[in-house]
Length: 96
Image 1 (tube, rainbow, N blue to C red):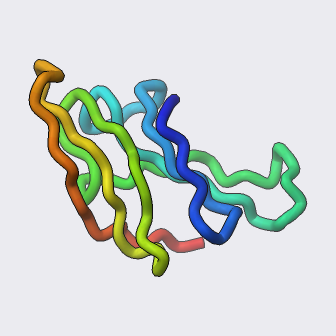
Image 2: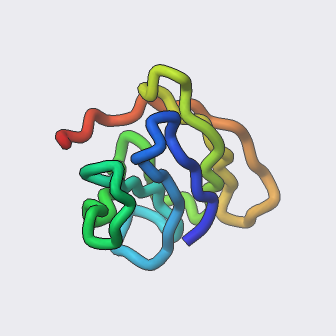
């Protein structure tokens, strides 16, 4: 896991991971707490943000989320790791 990013609501965490099945080597996931108690069992199982955010590229570094929580910005690198760019995507709606 890497590139953790707390959303402004303080209950949602976005991060990249190679430890779960995904579309590429490093996909963006999110999890959120159901309450403000910060208990270990209060977290929802990691959710892969899907093809709207992830693809078959090997390297991705998560960056930031817009204040309204609808747009994400991240670095995406070509497979060789040499050429990267900043990308912007609309985050999929996650039912909570």
